Image 1 (cartoon, rainbow, N blue to C red):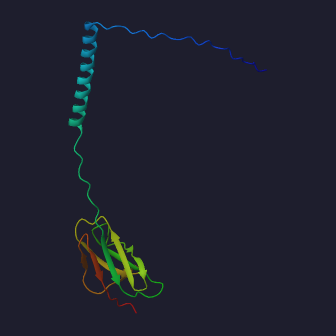
Image 2 (image 1 turned 90 degrees about the horizontal axis):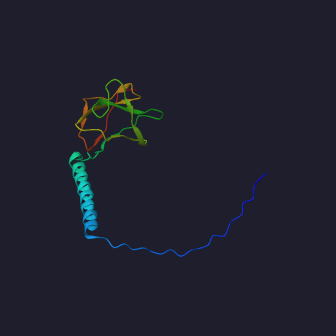
Length: 148
């Protein structure tokens, strides 16, 4: 069972505005209180500003790219091993294949020169000495392999 509620008519009564004349003593009291709270707020704000540590400038990530122009044969992949920017001499990282003769590897974590060497299928090392790439630059190489 539900109860039916009926709305009762509310009689609107005009409200008289009462304006009280403030005495000089009351005005001074209100003004003093307002200045105290304003002073407290100013002190809090100043304390927060001093307590905050200055933000360090954001280090802009620079992109270092190592590109290789080499035909590694259909079905084979080119890997990179080395030192710096997350590279390792133990396990290679697969390079991105851009076209049948172009491979690339990019990083934003190089803060010093990178020493590297390329491998086919992470097994066959490129001929010659290790290569070097400077951070924030693109290094292009054309490695040769003795793999046939």
